[in-house]
Length: 151
Image 1 (tube, rainbow, N blue to C red):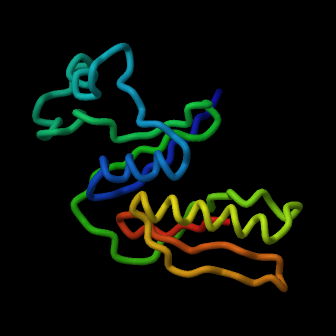
Image 2 (image 1 turned 180 degrees about the vertical axis):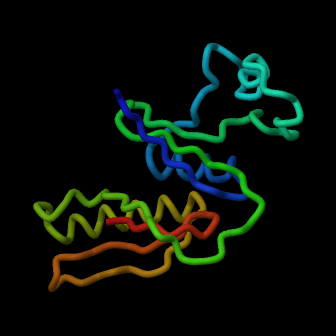
């Protein structure tokens, strides 16, 4: 039996998270299936009762996908409670090229990604500049406060 992977992230504003994480991961908002104009239209066609589709639900994508089809689907599930503690998991956005790439080149790549992500709504928490360990990375937060690293 084939298995696929979906990452589900609880959040308060799925559209904001779709916009940010699509840009951060080089993903795209997931189009509605079967030629439907919106996800709401798709769910209605599938018989989902109107009372299960709150106002605005499905009018814009709440998930992102890898346009190359390699990475998992990411669904941003709206929940009523806010984030209150540190993540128990996080993304590592590996933009530097790995340890075979000179540290100064990796630092430049990480810096460029940090600038792009801050412009998209992220917050830089701290830089991890440890040349003696061959490390240059950034700890960041997405627009809802979820931690991630850029390495």
